[in-house]
Length: 202
Image (cartoon, rainbow, N blue to C red; front, side, top):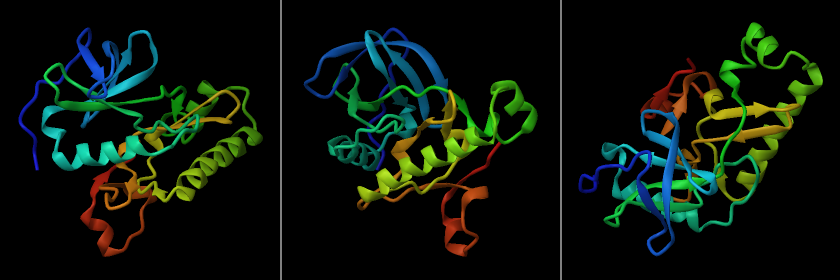
């Protein structure tokens, strides 16, 4: 169910962290996608994802509220920590830890890009990435949270490969809220999988 149309806040606008939380200003836009934009939070080390107006629904807000109520705290998992509200009290997004690094798709999967981004890396560094990513999944699965969409654009790596961030956590399967998207390269081929919204690894 769609919510009443709300004009999403942008750079320089003031929002609230939680319905009764403090006000804070959105800083520089860091990224944008089909669902919304990500902004710095002025005076706060975290960032905010603000949805496009047509991406806000009662179901999405209910899922975010459930996720924010969970004790999920691990560096590298950009989990929804608090809901963000516009000045008139409408939920417009959420706060998460800030990710660092380069997306797997644009750094590790193409050898010239790997040499450019991480010229000193050896095989051990690639193993570090694999282990760090799997440890994130193990942590989430132990909490009954399922990462239904393995997308190399949503995995950022830095340093020696042990610094791995996974973003777009709002798509994860939590209780009665399934993961609504998938990436073709990392999905089973069963017919049921065709019901999902498809991401391509470009």
